[in-house]
Length: 121
Image 1 (cartoon, rainbow, N blue to C red):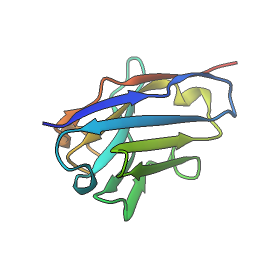
Image 2: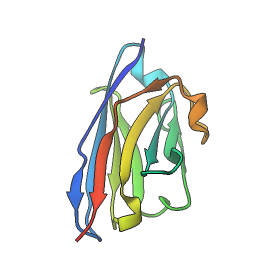
Image 3: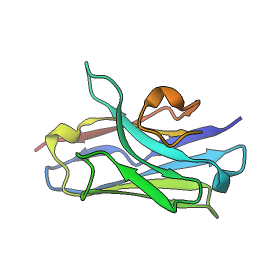
Image 4: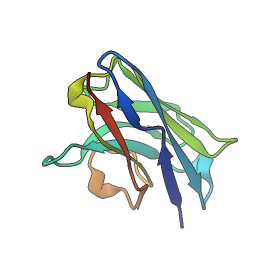
């Protein structure tokens, strides 16, 4: 059983940065693919970024490309989402997920509890 715990969310001004963390336990962290999703109020959960296995390949949504960077530290069993140049439309609950790397959130069997990111002046 894989357990995921996100942290690092908060309130930030437009143009600011945040780094989200996702601490994993259970399974072999370095061998399973992971992704980040977000969900704004009244909207469906949306793909943000993902990597396969050790992170050799990464994928980003169009809205995240160029501003967000996904990474992982296998020694610490932790994945990260570095978010720069944040915009108000990035406001959402951000989730990390494990067990798949595709863009459809329904493919992922393991989820964290989510961390709130609010971008506002």
